[in-house]
Length: 198
Image 1 (cartoon, rainbow, N blue to C red):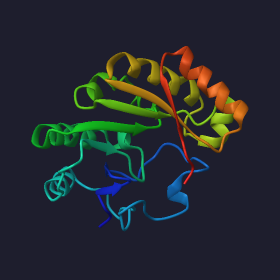
Image 2: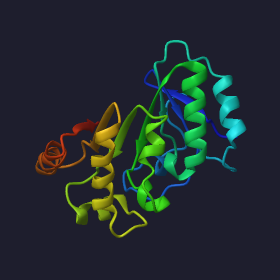
Image 3: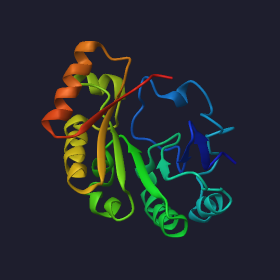
Image 4: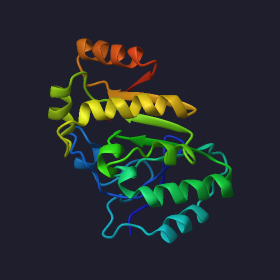
């Protein structure tokens, strides 16, 4: 069984699915089988609701103030398990919840799921990845043709309801592209996080 909860750089992460509607060129999962203290993040069978809760009950949350849904898949592809277990973690362990997402959940589920997420998620980090739709399609390789505008719309909607919303890029982008991404974020009043490629 793959790790459901794992730690990395003094944060605790929830790996609840390997499903993803993107195939990003730089995705860490195409280079190695685990991150941080995890031994393996690839599931042979997706974890059940009960298995995720059991992993939480077996974990010592002392010293951690946030649970981050981010593993070897897009957490919103396992939406029901995300919503139920995030509520469980908040209620039982009094921990804040952050969702790291590609921002394509509304396309994937064919409806606006942000009101559902807002009940159990405090902070959202959305992968921007590129400054234009054309570059985004090249780098992110999503299943959807209109992914870039949908992701930006998701970010704008998220920014209205969550305690903190950010767009993120990886520092492999050119200086010009980083500036263009900063403008996209600034125009929407959203914080831009520049992550180091690792």
